[in-house]
Length: 305
Image 1 (cartoon, rainbow, N blue to C red):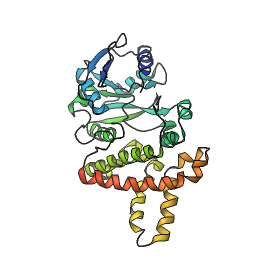
Image 2: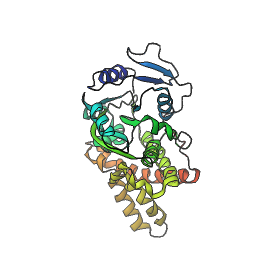
Image 3: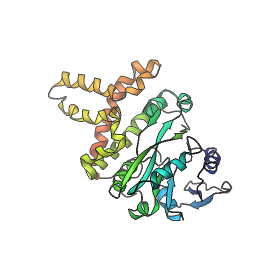
Image 4: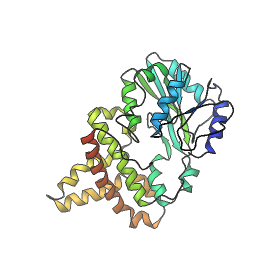
């Protein structure tokens, strides 16, 4: 997020009906924070790699029985959100984590340029993602007992899905009816190239996840969003193009655009002139990235660094 997001988050946490007994800020930025907001404790992470490193370091520094992971550009939807999730976690034996729905506010979405909206269109609404790192409440002993996020295999994508499945081996991970608002900002105009690169990053994580978990991935709540995953079923169609060119290309073109169905609501000439062909390119980029992740068993590509 942006530096201005932090006071808003701290204020929202301190206003919760069930307040956290400590708020730990993990800072791995090249220019460390000098004056953390009142009521917070600063932990500096000398390794600036990805968020998962910060989450793990913060959990080790925490002193409570429960760990709440958040990003600084997120805010719980109301002042009772944490209390409701806490009761959902502690009220059922064997439950190890409770995670929030994620929603991108419409006002944030409208501020993006066209390609920025293409990138984020599927996140508008209350999305049942599973673990997201945006408002996830874990039993500290279980989270630390499995080593937290797997920072060896997953650097910039896929770590949330992997953590969901590893925690699920220890107990139930509940997707709550509570939502967290993700005030995602795009610090610079997003280009078509950025969309392709981000898609490559996510697809590489799918390859690495599939190598580790196989069809167990279907248990992840996020797997229920069919348009988010339709492109994966088009990979075999790409291989059929040399054998059955015309029917394979027709299926590929239609399927690629169904896979980005959420973007059809964008009222822009690029939606109908450029986007249909870019969607096909995304399938091809996704296939290449998935193969790479499948072969290496690792997610390494990043648009963030």
